[in-house]
Image 1 (tube, rainbow, N blue to C red):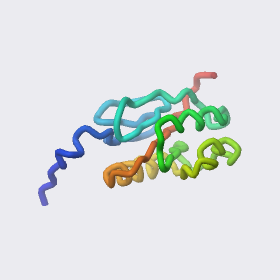
Image 2: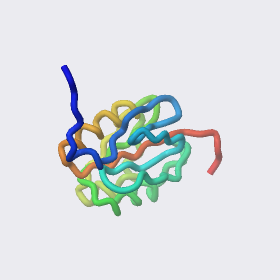
Image 3: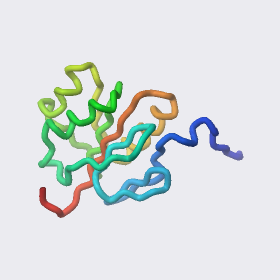
Image 4: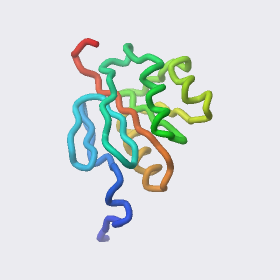
Length: 129
């Protein structure tokens, strides 16, 4: 079977790869935490450790006007405490936590369906905040 890219989707930010310590968007590798929406720039997400997450990290996602936020928590599934995501959930914005691989796949599916989805990928590094 021959697959062809839909030209109407060409300008959308698509996760094209992922692995330990990186995520690739439109074939550009990112080795620090990022915020990905279907349109616009891939934005840095200023958090480098799961235990350093705070409410402001999730509150910043509201400006992108998502209907759902997917949180890629790293190599394993971890849930952000509900008090951290209140700025989103109180405005009826769904928040789903997944390991990064599942989060990237889910983002690509929702984005291709035209949903207002934002992917927040935590890439843990040794740097301190």
